[in-house]
Each structure stands twice: as structure tokens, then as C-alpha cells.
Image (cartoon, rainbow, N blue to C red; front, side):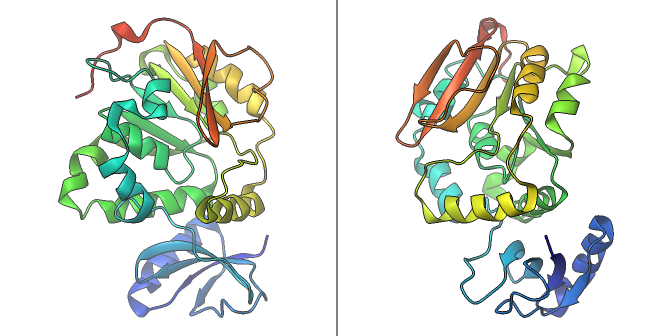
Length: 266
């Protein structure tokens, strides 16, 4: 993968140079996104912050972690609260707000939803590029007062989820581990397809999902929740206790013990 960090406007130059140094990538000014050479993708500081741009004449739009506008903001306002499928899968109901480790954070959308519902969520992301996008999105969201309470419940760490879970000390064990391994989702939405293609080029498909699930089952105190494409097979290993199925996605729930003892984080 030919990847560079760039900036469009001078006020993004310092951030671009710092990130390029951290990631060990070339840093370029005002890259020509219409050309597929020499970079296939560019982490670009534009007017809206940091985004991952594919290059070439038929390139899709940018991929970014956005908690302020678009689909995430709409879901925060109109997503259905504790009645939505992810909330039910995670056992969120009156008086119960489990502590959660999202071991495959990606762009943080599901973690954000869980945090808006009152859960403390610690996000793990092993890809340095995806981690940078997520960190930039969280930084941008800090400027929005109405998001402050939700953001206080979200923490981010660059770490391999499997390794982190395997080494998790007992005092840091979460009530619930949430997993969404890279897998060909059947969601037809253009944004989802665009991000899946971009990330697949960057990090490939997760090949250690069985080991990740095993580590999650050891680390979680009460429950492991795995998000899958609706018709995808369950991860190899222990069978789910039950599943909740939506239009395009499915949640496989591995119930270890009751969540009733989990303390509310509100």
C-alpha cells in the first residue's frame, strides 16, 4: 500500500508533519488526488480535519471519523435509545450500564452509540492509520458542548485487541467485550462499502478472529457481543448463547453470567 500524509491548507501542515513522523510515512503538500500515482491513499488534513482519501479518477469520497454530523449525529438523536438492537445485545436497560471494551474500534461509531446510552467504553484499535482517524474525530468532537458528557465516557488506546485482552489484569476486566472483526458485511450503504474497501486495502481482513474471541471470553466478566453480517457464520470456537438479527447485521451474544451486578456508569 502506497500511503502518504498530506495537507491541503497551510494551517494543517504542522499536524501533517507530526503525524507523518509518528507513522513513518512521507509527508506531501497539496497532493494530486485525481492521480493514482504515486500514492494509492492519502491521510489528508483538509478543512474538516483528518480524512483518508483514495486517489485516482474514479475515487470514492473521503473516509473520516465524524461524531458531529452525518449518520452518527442522526443516530444519536433518533436511534431509538435502549430499544435499538445494539443496546439489547449489550444488555443495556434500566439500572444496567456495563463497562465495555470495544476491542475492534474502527471509526468508533458503535462505541459512540454505547457511550451515548451511558456506558463507559474503552476503545482499542491496532491499525495506526485507523487509530489516527479515530483520534482526530474525537478531538474534533470535543469542541461541541452537547457531546462533552458522551466523550467523557470514551477512551482510546492504540493496541491489538487480542493481545490487550490476553494480558488484561483482573482489576481492569470489563463487564462486556464488544467485537466487530473485519468481515465482508452485506450492508449496501455507500458509506459502509466505501469504508470497507478503504480499510481492507489498509489492514486486510481479520484472520485472528477465533483467537480474538477466545481472548474476549477469558477477559469479559459477564458477556461478549460479536457483530456479524446477518448471514455470516459465527466465529469458530464456542457457540453463541443466542443471537439478535437485524436487516443487515446480527449480534452473537456469549452470555457468561448475569449483567445484573454490573454497576451503572451514569
